[in-house]
Image (tube, rainbow, N blue to C red; front, side, top):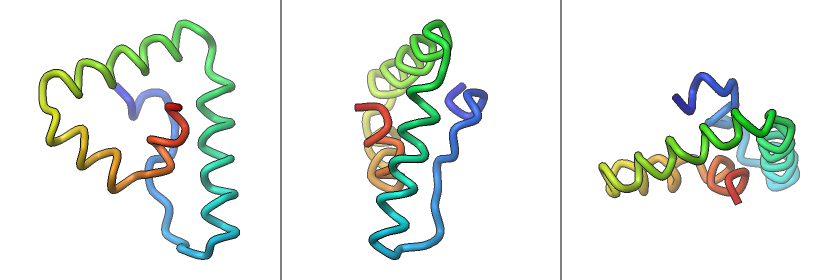
Length: 71
């Protein structure tokens, strides 16, 4: 699952500088995944979007840093 990739999916501080640091931190965590784990993460996200688009939209809109990292 996405959780098993050990990527933080929420941040509590809303300061703009910290948000940028949070996005970069999560993006770096995703970028540092081994290729097989990155593929699995993307595959699971695709399955989530196909199976339940509303849930996926909620997940990504409430955790924009995750959406940013997946880009």
